[in-house]
Image (cartoon, rainbow, N blue to C red):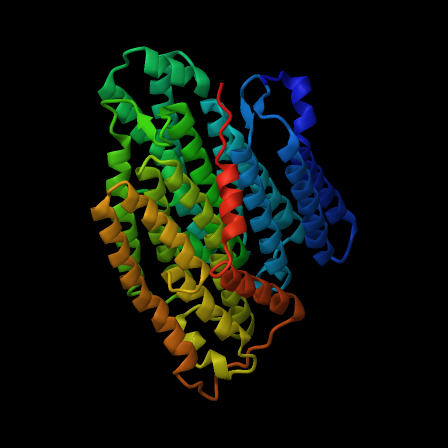
Length: 492
């Protein structure tokens, strides 16, 4: 199915709903006094878009808007992930005193605009569309990073993010121009046909792929495109930091997989992908994956600020996720999708505890978590322990199952060195995660330490994420089936 602009509108309902919600929030912001209602309106709009996305699972796969975007289970999966992250972050924002100081209408509208850009990133089947979608997400992210009023740390983080993003974007579009020069097309289908039927210069093609990876890589936060991450995570509003850590990374994975698999690789009858001979991008990703997880974990060891620690942890997890792409098999890709869902749940939960503690104490340092289990409600400390041990990969938690599938896919394809490095890094990560748990439970609070109180909204969300982390560590079958079904690219 190859649809023109008018025929494509029938399958564009989730994007229409999200765009309509953005406009509605902007208009309502001009007239209503209760700004918290804007977050509720945004959540309702996301839920409607979520429902419309689920409805599209019954639609035939195809290419829309003259082959600019794809309608397939792969794109629908990442739209659902993006909407889930957006809903949870908006919910988290309701209980954040930091967000309460911001312009609520602008905050919600920019967050939804970023989510809309991620829709386009997941669906793009044309290099121009991929570039525009990534820029839409980037620009809104720069603004939201520097959104805290009169906060020098926030402004500095936004400036660093902008500079790194501009360099990565420039490198990416330069690589795209090389691809266009060699193939005469920006369309993924035409790229595939030209590359496998023609005889392009292999060295030039490899250089172009590396340049394109720079643009994708700074979204996924893998080395050497990670340097913006710690400062941005620390300086941005905490709920938006949580959004960046999961939704932005997921969208980066989506745009990378769609380009490097159906566009420039071939699926064999054995379920394994074959790359263009002489263009060794999987080996490049192999090295990047090992360096990323190692640097992320080693850098996290010395961090005293919890948001910076989670930033380096996120870099390490980007390295774990990349393992699924290195092995060039559908098992590896399915493991990536599974891990993205699991990571979304446990990482958002960890950032929610950061919000709760920051509300009570104004602190983000690990020292501020001293005796957290004995300072009023014990729920944040117990939940944080669940999330951190899940991030480590300890059973019987969801993170263990996610890492098990990734490691199994790697070992199945006989990438033993990669598996050993990944296991060693998981052991390293246990130290800095356990250090936070030790501070919360074994260090007793001092009289000056604030009492931690949970509002009903945050308590409900914290309980939900904790239960999901536990349940997916025991009963993961439906999610495995869903991710397997979602690994369907529409190619023509």
